[in-house]
Length: 187
Image 1 (tube, helix red, strand yellow):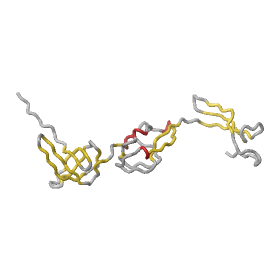
Image 2: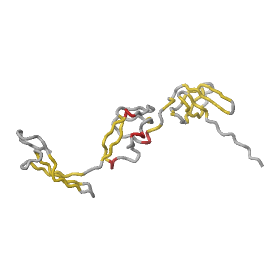
Image 3: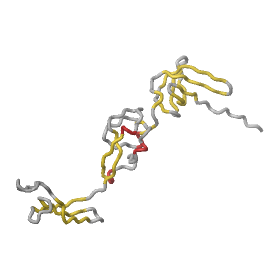
């Protein structure tokens, strides 16, 4: 749309006579140029109103495992009708989490792509701890998966080359998951 205003008049536009049909979201408005002029150029404008929601997005690319901080968050307006149920609309749900897969800047974040920050990266050496009763053993292992605090991951015992399940309990530290002893049924 082109609006032409004489060079000696103010280069402004006003919206007058705005009508919105709340049932279907359609609107009709009259634009006047220059703004509020009695003899200004009048243009009829029709369109559709779309509700928008401010959605938190990341300011820069975040790769898998990086923790999201409050200063990493920006906001964009998105049509509410196009937002999926899994799109994060509350910034507090992002803070302290990390992506499972990289997230580009300026893109809405899917809840399913968030997890706890990675404490142990894949392929790193870790201390593998076994505590049972009064016994405490520690061996070296290599992680086969990345994991955050409390995640159960696969770890390869360096000495025996056996794969075990272990819970991440700290940076470069995992605890072997043991099965509960089975009690014999008494007859």
